[in-house]
Length: 297
Image (cartoon, rainbow, N blue to C red; front, side, top):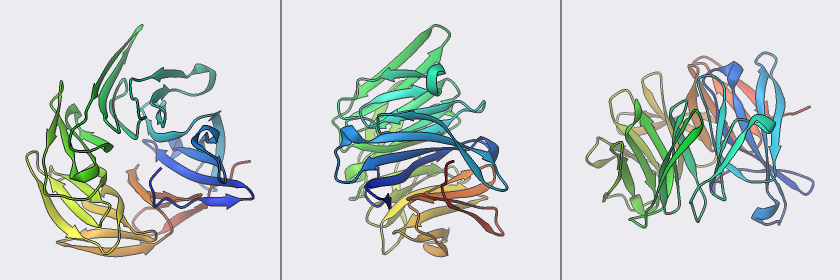
């Protein structure tokens, strides 16, 4: 969970939307972290729900787990993939799902689907790729004690060319077989990464820096006066979450606030800008905003 995520407290329980993923609005899934106040990580649970009806909004629970899911992705056919804080990869849900413990001693932080059966994972001291085929699973996980701990990973077309970002301004690129560490001029934790239509990957920094990776170097693009916790590409523009309440768009070398909402994450999904934080999830279609607190029957 990111440090700046906002939890909603209900009695003695903290409820936080950890991740939202999907290829379409009617295939949207959320991972909801449920934790007792003042408890430890062993007491954290996760509920997976999907958007059963867009208008009016209706969420339905699909599965629950006695572990902390920190990252979520959904295939083109609607199968959820998830990574956990203790280093496992989950594929599918409930009785039909599978759980693969990975050699990640300090857990996992993020994932990205290169294809429906090909996933890149990252976490503190670890970078990896897992390929699932009929009757076999190929797990290629690398211990990396390089320049920092990986926080997020993203690619464009397939696994080759993907990058991971992390603490101390660390960047790794993936050539399809190996992860290559790169020194950068950034001196802050790089919390999120998203590829843009200009062929560069944009990276959000915890000290407010927005950077761009062109395949060889990380360049400073803009700077906010608050931490950047998320970045995405939508309709030809780059969007970030700045601080705890500002959704902003990159305009030249400046970040222009477009909406104040108490969120910490955002993604482009099905031609909508989807944002979330605490128990709130909302979407923007370019003209209006819809959403509110997540309610499950």
